[in-house]
Image (tube, rainbow, N blue to C red; front, top):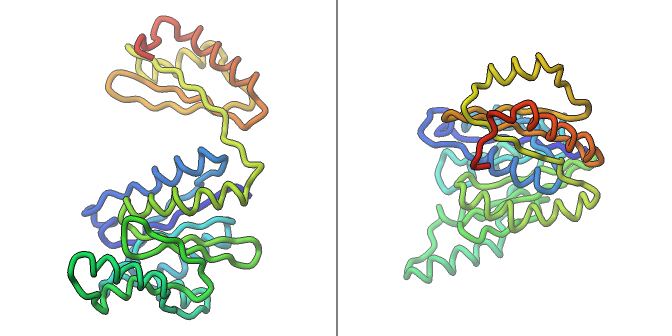
Length: 253
């Protein structure tokens, strides 16, 4: 019930021209309030592909985030794809038009039809203001307690709407959600495979606790996580790890 999927849309993401940081940012923000990003899918600017990817995600998951393709150019087709998939009309949001026009006026320019296109939203969407850009986010509540969030692709705009509009709403919608318990043990001077061998030899298999190993630059970070309510198991796992790896603990941690 507390799981989410991300659909990242854009040819530039698949060609390697643009680094996609949305999964990292979204996963971090959701984890902090006790929700979990379970899948990240990157797809091209193609109407049938967008429709099928978002539709399939909504069939699996309660919360779906779609990012990208909301700009003023001809390849920004996310609205069209979602309108077709959901059977909704696309309408012009007056408040967003006024905001864009004001920004243009502040620069001594008249708003263009291309700029106004960024104010188009799905008819049943709750418009989420974009404090740093033109195209707003959208929250579309669907049958079966499903919610689709539509966000612009630029990271600054994505994160502004996520943190200012979406996370506060999710906190209210999921008041009982709690972040996973997390402890970190850092090592130095021992490789990941040697750590695995040492732990296996000691029979270290903690119950109700997940372990993650993240090597890099001569160090390994071991993340211990568990669902709320298993504080004792996490404490025990951390103490045991520190004991087994006492000769290799990173002195800077």
